[in-house]
Length: 166
Length: 166
DNA sequence: CTTACCTGTCTTGACATCGAGATATCGATG
DNA sequence: CATCGATATCTCGATGTCAAGACAGGTAAG
Image (tube, rainbow over all chains, first blue to last red; front, side, top):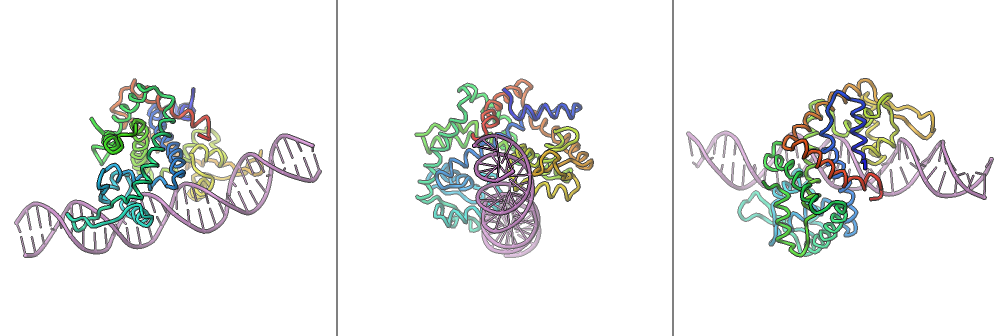
């Protein structure tokens, strides 16, 4: 069974036989799969009247555990967006009543963003549906394959997660 | 060795012990890796005075082989963007002299976008550097691991590439 | 205690993308 | 050959994101 990336690599091989394009087999698939995943997730969130970016921020707070509170700095590192983007996201989530901003008692420059009860209810429902949908998408893989895949991906990810300059 | 996703899964397990969050081990890694990859690619393209979106379009044309010509419709399906986005991209690439629009002799509704010589030179140089950089990023994996990883990713990708509704 | 640098958050301006709709043409059907 | 749905491309308005910089508060060294 071939996918689009197989066709892509064949085309490159024909056009640039001087190059070894083997890395594309892994990394182009990662990018394309991520793109498809985004769409699938968007569909799940839409059923909860939620956007992907809202989900990203709310889950980061939810994962933190009680009192569901993180600084904007920690949120932007958790979601891999810039500070300007995070300010904008928090503004809108606050308007929607899903989070609330408060001062950081330890650092007068700082702010703490806390999940409201309404926010927690919303994110819990959406997350449960998301995990279900993702399990479907993994349906073609055996449990052993899933572990193998996760381990291989981890070894690619570790350099990025340990060295922010990579 | 743990990565951010291991920490993420542990946090979810502590907060939502009622859910089986095992799918995240694979799919969250795919998304996060794709995000890091985007940044790495951006850095490579910047060395060629090129943006990621330019590269995406130009490589699609380059891969097509002589005469390096595709319709906007084929280009948008190859790059997974909407038609409005593709119109905008072609406009700017045409202004930059990297592609040229012409009529489709077979279909009066249609347009054919062709790579100029300048465009071909630019994309060939950037692509060679990109493959080199990607090979570095795969450095931690043995050739066998790379094949395994590529095969597992393919099996996740096939449903999307065969059934556009997925 | 004060100078100089670093950190955390927010502001601003530019811009690429999306989504819906408009227009023109194709192709199949009767 | 007329009709009608499908297809190809483009237009337009709204919006989320980024990059760079502003600003206030922290932090360490002299």
